[in-house]
Length: 87
Image (tube, rainbow, N blue to C red):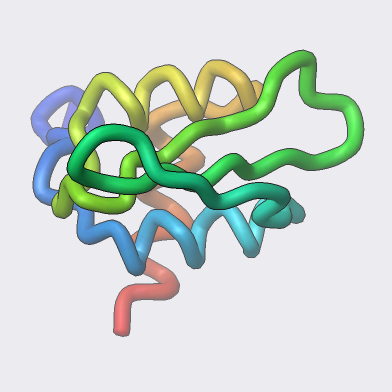
């Protein structure tokens, strides 16, 4: 299965932001903590906001996995979007 070989690493921050936007999320807050900032994203129906650290690019795999779980999406859903929207 090709999906098992695809890794959720090395996804650029700009691409992941675009994914969140395409999933209907909107950025609600931006702040700074320590040496870098963070962004909070939300959408109707989410139990908790999605937080991205803006000083880490590419996005860590754990953040992507947790975000997909929060959105109720699978790794396959993400890669279907990613390869159809890669610029």
